[in-house]
Length: 312
Image (cartoon, rainbow, N blue to C red):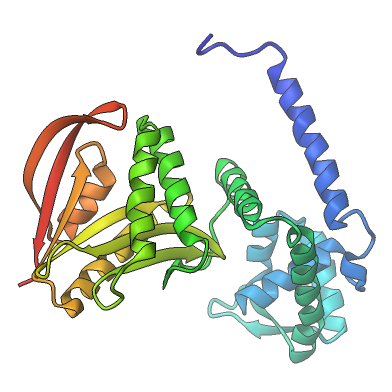
């Protein structure tokens, strides 16, 4: 029943996590004495990575973020310094030195970085792209649940490529079913809109943007021709993993900017009153609500809204 905790459930979840940890550490080779057949242990390689990634940092910052014992880290840093991999510079407050890799340190890190990329590439390269995306998103969910800080690259917008339109249809269907209870008729509508765009669109006046982060699609938006004077904004979506990063705002801004360049005098859109985050983006971009009407669609009762933006 809802709200009940299965007896012994925590013990079983602990056992499941320990099984996964054993599998994953064996898969990526961290139980070996040296990482990637290098002269560095896993801890040493992690410290090298932090120094390379940060440019300059203090020992206290590295110890805190890696949760390393200060004495153990100090021994690693002394070895790096002895081998000519590490330089110490005076910090502004003079209480701690700023640490940075020397040219030799960067040269020592380069094959580790390349080897790690190649190993992960070989690990997931045999998986189909949807499975790769699912794997990355699952890892992101684990990180968020355990309080990990996000260090992702900023999402970038691009035009669509082969396979993107299928992703648009699939993710609209899945997310709207999960978050709002929409049935399969909504996915059919999205397929009709996106498929029609793919089959016949005027690149000078119609466009699709895909937001991508770390090689994964995290959002999309379309502008299609409604008339010579009016462009129609359609199919805005942002993945839960990318919400709060400004992706939706950038997608709407790209759509509005292109509509102006294409010579439209107005942009229209149809949305639902339950899509609170999207409505906020539209209002922020200058759209105004011009009409609302209750209706039953996609298996649920809704209030449909028409919004417009005058492009002057």
